[in-house]
Image 1 (tube, helix red, strand yellow):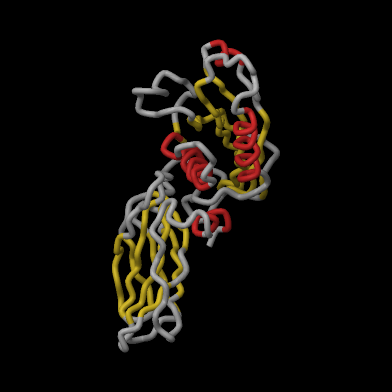
Image 2 (cartoon, one colour):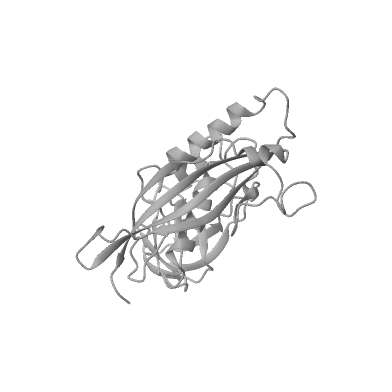
Length: 282
């Protein structure tokens, strides 16, 4: 399991997004689930190992969109014993586990796994935006509704706030011009750096103390930076099925955007950059 997603399933976070999977009630070994993304938008392949050959194994999945509240587990298919099971599910980020019903009536379940279903036909720049959104949502930042972590063309506030589709506080993820340094890369592959501007926006009304909520905002910035700095970005797929993101780094932007403050908003930004090693040519 990816470590930062496993945090959602630890004590204190259990049920924040998902109802906990069942525990084993059999002495037989629990199944082991691994999921491989097809990378073409058609779904994924679940591989079951470790289950009894006579067990009926069901793979359960739950879409992870960052919405608070319990998400529902849904059956994605079943098979007898071990083997491969095609998962025909839409593009997105998922949790999954396998349950096994043994011939003796006992049951067992695998650990929960996190996986993505992607389409390599999607631009890598857009995949970086969607993957960055999922990772920030996984942080469960205090006092932030994960439904307000959104991908947009521009970091504007026109549709934010009471009575609008997105409430405040919010985090806006928007594309930034990519970099294509001509001397970076290896034989037959080039390095392209994609940028995602991460902007924290909240109602402020030019509050007079100039310090209200500052501990919260700085904690959000710290948590987001640590989630991306010098790490690969999970959930991005190139046409050959591999993850092209070889590194990520964070550039500080405006800690406070003065123009937003004069418009009664708090706005604070940082720039996430993702280095993608891509095939040269068409």
